[in-house]
Image 1 (cartoon, rainbow, N blue to C red):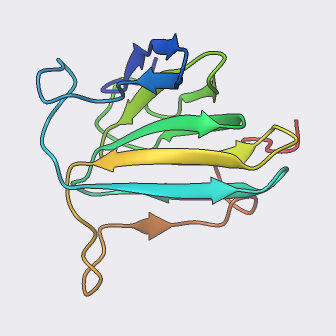
Image 2 (cartoon, rainbow, N blue to C red):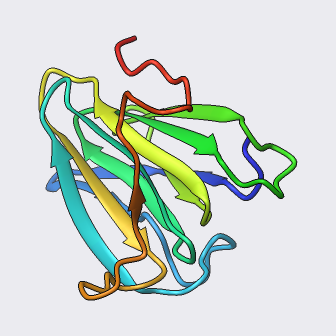
Length: 148
């Protein structure tokens, strides 16, 4: 696993009315601080990649459909520099994956229906000075194949 990445398996609790799933709590070992929660989606086959942050941690989970989350460690001072990890996340295998600063990440919707993703971040998005750095999803030095 890439240095600094944390994964927590989640539990879906069904009852006669529907389901409940706790994603991140302030008493979790992986909780750092609260900045913002947002939802993003991807249509089937769509890739949203690659980006990274200088100070922000992301905590991704998928609450509908299925996403393949890919991570690339681009940090020069990391013992796992150059490593690629991937996670398939859905309600069939629910988890939250926390991504530290400096790790490139992106995801692809690999289900037939839209993937709905919840991200809890450690800092609110700053529209005037965003902590978000992007590279092209396919034209880069990472060497990850999104087409698989």
